[in-house]
Amino acid sequence: MAVAAGSATATCLDVGVTIAVGIFELFTYAIPGSLYLAFFAYVVGRAHWIDLAAVTRMPVFLLVVAIVLISYLMGYLAYPVGELANKIVPRHRQNHTRNDFLRRNPAAKDREYVNADPFLLLAALQLHDNEVATDVTRLRATGLMLRNSAPPMLLAAIAAIVELFVGHSPVFASTCAVLFLAGFFALIVQARRLGRWASMRTLEFGFWLPDIDEKFRADS
Image 1 (cartoon, rainbow, N blue to C red):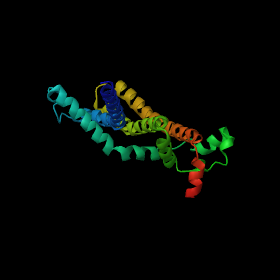
Image 2: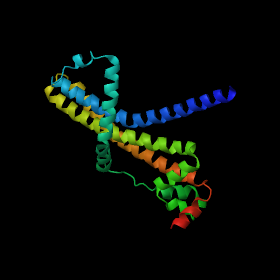
Image 3: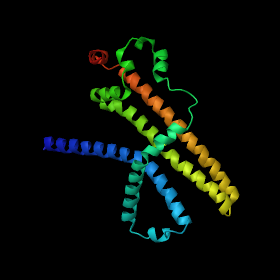
Image 4: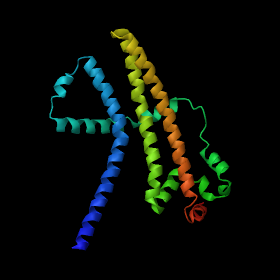
């Protein structure tokens, strides 16, 4: 009886972990996708192409499922747009994560792993201790979420500028345009910062991986 209860508890824990990871991955795409969905819903509603009031009269369960699925798909399909936005926005500082790490940790100067590919190093970290690697994965995923949320902000700023000329509240429209445009640049900057933090954490965790230098030295 105790063994069965223990097995059931372990199974529930495994399912819970799987669901948690799935929800985190879903939100990484769904949050930017929901912003795209909100923008397009505003455009079609403002142009009177679709009766949004009729859409909201759908069964709540079906409406929620449709919003989640569409948001996820739009966020997934629009992933290259976020990557393009990241390339377009100028960088005020270069990414010298390795140099910063070595300056803070001189003992790692002659370590082989420091020059390894960061994604390969993250894979090694996941094999050694997946729970520790989750911290790096969280930083990377959050950075991608912020980066992919930037283009909808730019679209919203463009829509606000249009409303400045065709709408009835120019002060509100101009305020929204400034805020959305500032949000676009702020999200890109914060995404890059989180990316640097993720790379730094990968190097810091890699410092304590046993035999990691021998592995990369053998591969080279």
